[in-house]
Picture 1 (cartoon, rainbow, N blue to C red):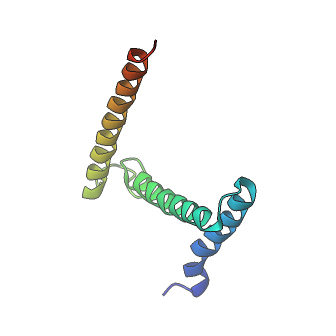
Picture 2 (picture 1 turned 90 degrees about the vertical axis):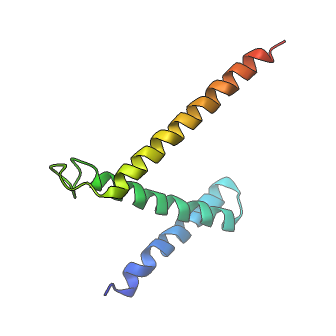
Length: 99
């Protein structure tokens, strides 16, 4: 069982980051806390995904790639395609609307 300090560490870190972010940017503490907490969460997901990819720490030879990795890779590719199309549309629209 994990100790209480390990369970509280992400929340303490989020609070400290939120205090710093709100002091520097002038945002409210609640908005800064949400941003800091989501950043820590996403960082953990990306680190886990990177470790599970072929050649990563948990999968050095590429033979035990978990099924979720393939789904995430395809979701990222799809998101990249959607963002690329949106960027192209914005570029075409901005050129078209130029006087």
